[in-house]
Length: 74
Image (cartoon, rainbow, N blue to C red; front, top):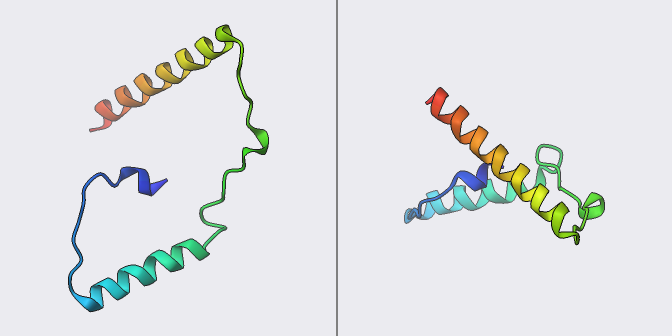
């Protein structure tokens, strides 16, 4: 999701710019088809330590692959 890429603070001081910014946020919240909500209905709760370890290893592997791909493309 795009919001995960926002890492810096910013200041909007012009009243008209503030209004446009707030309106844009409100409009984006209405656009449910564009950003579907992720339901936890399909969540799997891991309790077995071996399953948790395997899950975390898979997560770390994907993270390393994404980082490598970004470095190759950047």
